[in-house]
Length: 318
Image (spheres, helix red, strand yellow):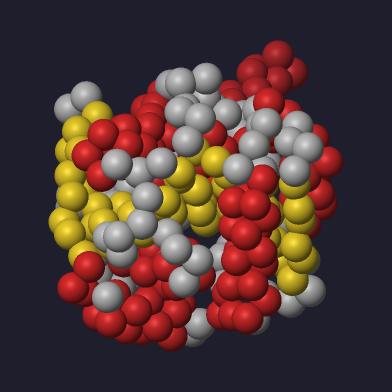
């Protein structure tokens, strides 16, 4: 066998290894993407309890208890955005102000019950919603707040025209926070959307997803790049863009709630979000302990009082 033949065999073997590696990578990326951000049927991410561990189980129980205490005020509501039917529940306490609770990934409107209490006690009606591809709502793809923000605008229009609401405050958790930020900075967002509260808001989901892969001890490169490619093919968006790219245009009050232990929306990026925020009325409240989207459970009094003070200041200025 000549040196040239040996060289050809080596190159062929190396190419085969690269092709096999790319195939394995794409399979792993596809499984991760579909599992994380795609709903193939309405049994996935429905209105049943999505969590099997604490503190989410206790958070759910507290939220359900709040809903049952206020069930007499609850009304099933529905809007349509294009071909997407969206469903929610509206708690009408007789106010002309309303808080919209924007749930995160895998979380139906049921998750929103847990965060409603400080708003109800502050004189706000409450709207909880199934995000697209969650609960009873239509949809296949989670778009990390992009299309969800357009859904939020439909709900806002509903509250104004059908319920006579004069002031709206957004409360977003994780992806719900990203969607809320896209909503409130949209030029089409009505002036009556007076402010936003965020918990665990990420700068760009690319970083959060990368941290999730690291936590799972999964190869990050090139799996992360393949996941982003699949997301772009399916939704038209990229994970490399996020709230940090538009938060400088925010000109309404912001209350950021964040944990210094958040493993996905890490505190360094939370600080960058806050620093870049264009609002002249902004506040960042830190929790020294606590996992992602679990701050109210860690310190309920601090959480609720932070929101109540934010709303009190908001209404004193309007």
